[in-house]
Image 1 (cartoon, rainbow, N blue to C red):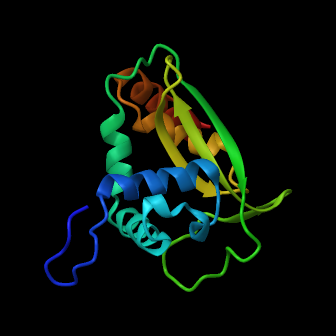
Image 2 (cartoon, helix red, strand yellow):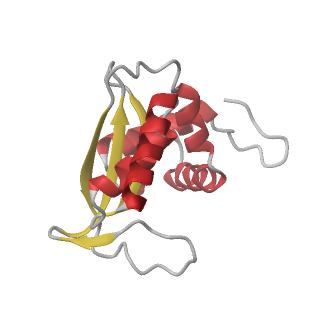
Length: 160
């Protein structure tokens, strides 16, 4: 580890911090419980928040999608139960937490390609139906067949 010239504290490796973030997402533990080998939990947490607000995670996800096989596309949704204290934070940005049969939940709507690799996703409140988000997911996929199909569906709905 290198030392910074000002404070002479060890400078954490960025790769270790990213591994700490991925570890926390994989295991689902509280931020305070990530192992010390990934660095101070608060530093890892702050890095995650900064990158989330800047949209870096979304850019990384989009960069990892390389030549998806769109012969078959599968779309499904999955509920994630929210902590009892998760809703009601002060802020203007939406939190994607809603009320459903299971209580306060979020829902991940995910599309995968023929290889089983994720190619598009959106996160909504738990009360949102898969059908409403499927249109957005299909529109976001590359390929004219999907766009033409969506436009045809919209025209037929407006003629009713």
